Length: 475
Image 1 (tube, rainbow, N blue to C red):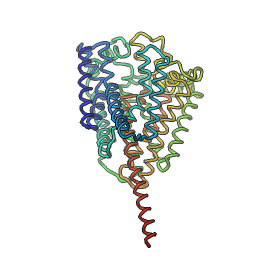
Image 2 (cartoon, one colour):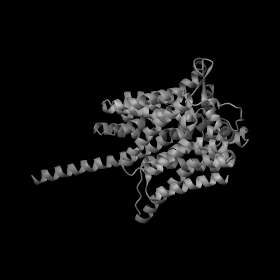
Image 3 (spheres, rainbow, N blue to C red):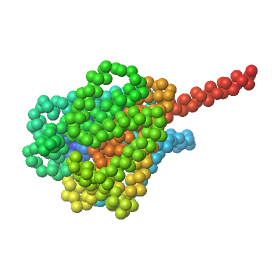
């Protein structure tokens, strides 16, 4: 435990130093490094007996502590400035996201599971809005956002390259030798069995197929940063139509690696995102409406035709958790309490021997949220996510009209968030910190620079009108 506290303390001190010296992109890079390497790093420490028990949970919470550190830093600075100047400025989306976080905090205080799983449940439902706010506060210029784009590209390519190496070059014993089983023993109380965790394989035609897991040690999590690159290339061509051969050099292997993760959630997310870009790239309202229709349609199809779907594919848990979760959310409009569902809370409950408190697993984010906080809160969350998608799509359309070369950034973000939102009905792995964290930080940053650009555009138009008016008056 002492080693874990020391490591996390060093990370927090480094993060604080980067924020204090206004090295914002360096802080984002630090956060990205923690997200990508935390699992493997903890595996190795467990394997060599350097951490165990509580120390493992402390290390795995490093990313959340870095997030809290950054949010407190920027909030203190903003509210401190407001106290000095007496002038309070805000944007609607970050304010709504902050309101959601406060609502979850109140809900957590009122009732829920015991505190460990309760906090884990709360963390799962506030993390993405919190990351959006962080991105909004971190983005001080287009220059930083351009660096984030490069980081995302590098991350997706690195995940793909290492994925090929670990899955098809290194022996299967690689993961076992670095502490794969010890990690899952501590995380979800899975007994050591001398074999890889179940999700490292996919059963296809009755035969186990090895999945690409890559840097994160989890094929489901690794698939989403790679999927973002595929959507990004599509957005680039839908808005620019200028072929670049170098794009093929990285997008083809990345797409191949994404397929080899055998992550149905990531593949469905990518398909939905690219389809929305193709059909609705000229209208933000249309893209938002189609996202909502696709989400509702998926829920209705799964709810009414679940048994028929299972004749063609596996995944009964995804269907059951969605349907049962919504039923529970209707039975109790305020939910059963945070910590009673979600993959994160389930893992904590299992490791704490509190399994009897868990009503739903982690196969449907929508079902998990409905179980914990009720259907009204679930609807509020999804409306907040749709508002984010709409605003980013609106900037995408506006910047296409202005022929801005970075318009595709906004299209990528809007479409990826839309794909993630729709698939969250039957999936939870893509709606978590490691899988989608950088995507939401980037989306918040894009919202920030998009709003700043729009304000400049409005001022420029007003100045032009004033000049025209003065010219007419002078004439």
